[in-house]
Every structure is written in structure tokens, then in C-alpha cells.
Amino acid sequence: MKLLFIADPLEGFKTHKDTTFAMMREAAARGHELLACGPQDVMWQRGGRVTAYVREVTLTGRSGYGVHDWFEAKQQPPDEIPVALADVGAVLMRKDPPFDSEYFYATHLLEQAEREGARVFNKPAALRDHPEKLAILEFPQFIGPTLVTRDAGDIKRFHAEHRDIILKPLDGMGGAGIFRVGPDGMNLGSITETLNQGGAQTVMVQRYLPEIAEGDKRILIIAGQPAPYCLARIPQGSEIRGNLAVGGKGVARPLTARDREIAEHIGSVLAARGLLLIGLDVIGDSMTEINVTSPTGFQEIMQQSGFDVAKVFVDALEAALA
Image 1 (cartoon, rainbow, N blue to C red):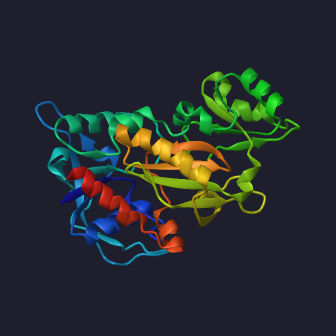
Image 2 (image 1 turned 90 degrees about the horizontal axis):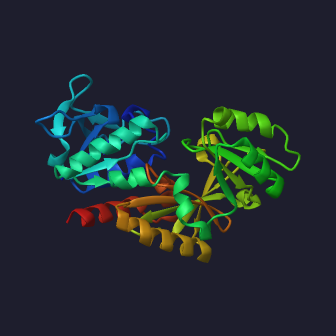
């Protein structure tokens, strides 16, 4: 079966930890053919079908820290070959955030491809309907005190009530743009101005959860079922963020009863909407984000626990296509 991965440039993959690479490696081991492109390579023209200009990719068997020759491609830009998305076995949308206008437009092209017969994972409409910060609003029973607003006065009042807060943009990833303001309110005004752009941009504000010291847990849900291990991303030094992209330490841990309660409920609801793979972020007993664009953590969990997340994912993909 041909699998098309729509992702960031392959040349930039860090294969010692990249989840898309883990998916590719497992799929290739089962004999699936790999195709790759970026969202910018997808197009539609009247009278035709949604088409991507792709490279046919084979894996070299080399991977690890600093390894760049992990793949070989039959085609190099600008000589990619056109392939209708409906003519491949599955399309895996693995482009990293931000969820900006171009990502939004890409979901519409992918939805048109679905109408033409393509099988896309995660489902494009579900990607649009579940922005990663705002998707938690549907499940208030699992989240801590949270505010979504453009208004600086709302943020000031939230801080006065909760005293220690986290502010973050709605379109970031990897911990980018996250600020903590403690009880003294130091720099609250300037941070708010930076994030809300004078009232032009919406901001998420949450009560600071001291349990972050034990890790920001990434819980993976595949076809509605949580993996038995999460990846606790533990802040290092004076850093408040546990994201691996900013130096957090990833530690695989078994799910707690509360983790499983949250994950099983979210999984049962969102899998039915076409989200094959979900990554929940949980701090302590509170969910903080629902990641659906390109959830990560496969390799770290496999390396530390022995649980083969990539195998389970490709099992679920094949079952969905059967």
C-alpha cells in the first residue's frame, strides 16, 4: 500500500526522536511504500482531482542523533511526481503547528480529496474543529481554571483571583510564547500586550499548576484507546515549561487512574469524529491541551517502556483502511 506523509521537510527530521519517522519505519517494515510532500505541494484544479507533488522515499536503515542520510528519494525538487491523493492507500497529515491560515486551507484541500475518495488521517474536518488549545473547552470537567479572551481586563481579573497564572498564545507549539506571572503581577501588562497584540489576538490563561514539577504528561490515544504509558516532560532548572523542545526531560510512566479516566473519555468521543491519533497534555489531574495535528512521543515511550507505539498505530491505521 502507498502511504503519503504530508509533513515538514524530511531533511530536518531528528530521527532519534521523531514520531513521523517512527511511523514510516514501521510502515516500511510491513512492506508499505512511502511517499512524502509538504502542504505547499498539494493543489487542485477544476476538472482534476486534488494532487500532491511527491517524492518516493525509501529508508536507508540509518537513524539516530545527528543522522541525516536516513532516507533516499527517487525525486528531488523540482522534479517531484504528481499523484492524486485518492490514488494512494492513505494520507497522513503530519505537518507541525502553527495552525495558521495555510494549515486551515490545507484541511479544505484534504477534505476535497476525501470527497474524491482519499482516506486522510487525522480527518481534515476534525483537525479544523479541534484546535489544540481550544478543544479542551468541550471537557470542562477535566481542566483547571481557564480563561480564553482578548481583553486585558479579563486577564487582570483572572490573575487577581488565581494569583499565579500561565498565559499562552493559541497557535504555538513546543512551549513557544508561554509566560508565567506570579502573585506580584510583575510584567502582567506587558506580557498581555505582547500576546494579545493590543486586543487583536485571543489568549489562553490558566491557573499555574505546581504539579508541573512532576511533569507535563503526554498521553497518546490511538483509535480511541490510550497507550498504557505516558511521557512525563519534566522542566529542568529554572524553566517552567516541560516541553522537550525547550530542554524538558522526557520520562515514560504508567498511566494513573486519573490519566486513564481522562484519556478513555476523550478517546471515546474524539475517535468517533475521525481522530485516529490524539495526544493529551495532562498536568497533575488536569488536562491542559488536546493535540491532534502531529502528536509526538512514540520513540521516547518505546525506548523507555518497551511499548511499541508505532506498531499499535500502524495496526490501527491498517484496521481503519480494511
